Length: 343
Image (cartoon, rainbow, N blue to C red; front, side, top):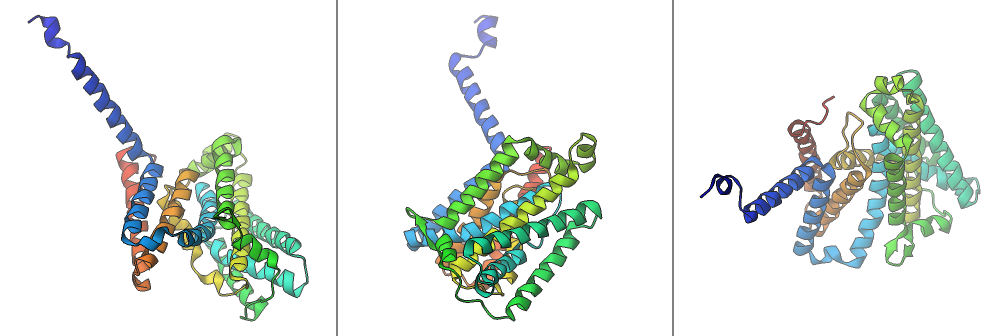
């Protein structure tokens, strides 16, 4: 046997080594990607529950999940935009509740046509977002504080406007937005898909999106690079507030009544949970819309699945909290294992 034949691996061995190396690179890439993990979790959870509860995949139940997903998912997208800049918005749930009350009040009590009532409501929500952005960027008020103020005020206004009673007799247009279908797909689910596509395009394909990531990564470095930090932060808060308004309008259409108790349902925590599960860093500057959408879908699969499996409502929050905890631990493990920036 010559030295050449001893040192040179056989062709079959070389192919096997290249194959194993490619598999190793693929596995490492998947492990580094938060999106891959949450998408895989969606598949596993959906399949497991579908096998255990046959009614889980019924068309009617899937349509219910589509409507629920629209509420959670749209709020999660708005919340994530704020978190990407290094902030937090605790008011999205309460503002959604107030938006539904305002739209119904404009329509019923002020006799505004439904389209005008919707535009007026979204305009007010945009002003709230501008207020948040101004307080955070001009006066350096911590985002936690100013949005907590809005959370409290929104709940109070919803009760003050209605005196604690639901507003009935809203225009059928609201119900049409929430209860109609395109084929077998509920219209609210299409709103969620549209919001996700627009957010993906802005963040992944525009300079504005890159600047939002830069602001969340390091505000001072972004400022020195000439990025309009205040405008990007304010735009994120305005987007979150307007998307909250959209959710509020969809909710009153689904219920066919504007109930002031809706704003206290804890949607802001679910939105934050969906963002974190989807790979958004609470320190800012890290996360993608694909993961955020998958995080919202995963939470909806779990929530609806627990109902299908007839799990006690008292235990459902425990499961949801455990999912959030596991997601945070997995995110920190990836950060340490694969060297992502620690802030």
